[in-house]
Image 1: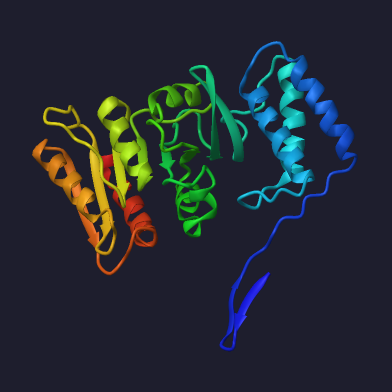
Image 2: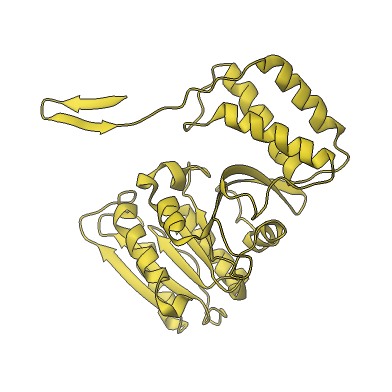
Length: 295
């Protein structure tokens, strides 16, 4: 589809049309195959979520983003077949982009991941992207011009975007441990990027487990820092727009980090509000992460 004005074409986008043969029988067979698996796994929980998604699509319920329904069905079938044989379908040896349900501490976390082709002898850095309130695991992939997945793909970095809620703080160390059972990454180069609510969640996790994260980019949001927090080994970049309602909390966060003698860089983007700051901030974030001090 294309949007045009009197001045000409403004934007063109492609939409996915998924076609699956013998859909009803395949969905029923997948349901039975999932139920027959003896234990829970990444394959089982992901296949179960894909089954729900495909059934929702057959009921003409529009998803929040352009989901490849037929591909999700094929992958679920293949993943369950592997699990039935005691094998793994998902891992570093299968690069690409996936919608996963990662079992972690008794529950499953919806994550969208970008897996690079990598050398096992040189595991890549890991970027965890945390969305704001009202967003999902799809936000950084399908929104903001796709800047985050493009930057990670060009560098060969592993990208994990988990779904979170405004209730509580996601336990990223536990999620990291679960991801590490399938995907190789450099544990000394784990980077957090969070926007708005995600910025606060990133700061909370850095306080909780500072040795697990090398750098945190807090965009359009603040976070609580207490005197004596052991965060001196983590680098921080705090970015906010001058028109952002979170400008005050973001500045307060930067000052609190400075008082704790943390490595912090504060950037205020002029004439920009809460959401559009991402277009300016994300390229700067990855240039900052490329610096030798983050490696």
